[in-house]
Image (cartoon, rainbow, N blue to C red; front, side, top):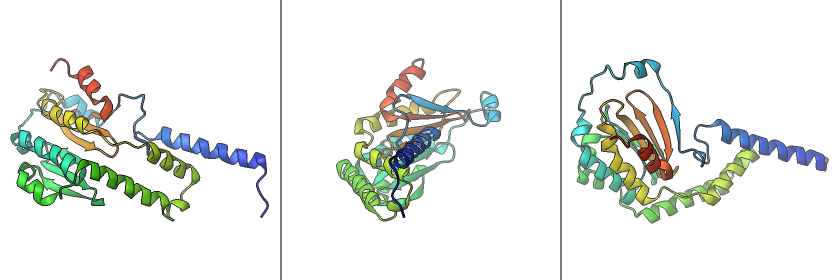
Length: 233
């Protein structure tokens, strides 16, 4: 097989670069996360929910009754246990958790049970935040060096390597700030919080409100989001 000419090599590199840019641009949240220039991304959902949101009466859910304890325990799970991602369904009463010790699966727990600190200690092995972050780096090191990575397109390998080189997790203080704001967002009289996902790997918070609007916010911009949108609360 003949070697590629300089022009052919240039065109191939240009094509790889174009594909990389396209993949990153097309995703709402790409492999590298949110665009650093975006404070937030808003997504409009079902219009029927938006149009009737003010007509629907708000009821206290079982989660609301244990909110204070639940928030403290979930923050503890993110900071001091194996959990790296949580989803709270305020209306459904379920909490989804993802563990660094079993990263390809997720568990579903009863939110009322998660309000019990002993339950957290039984179900989520203790691990320091620093060790958990190091484990994440080592897991991605293995993936990057695996034979399977050699089979993916060059532009995708380039995305993965760039992300891996500069990746930083959500800061511990950012986790605390997010958790402490949840009760306020849930207690809003009209457009209150329906569910939330907090992911320390992607440094991201995803929130859905009862009007079915979704907000996706980087943790570093979360404080600004709260200041800009909830100054009246």
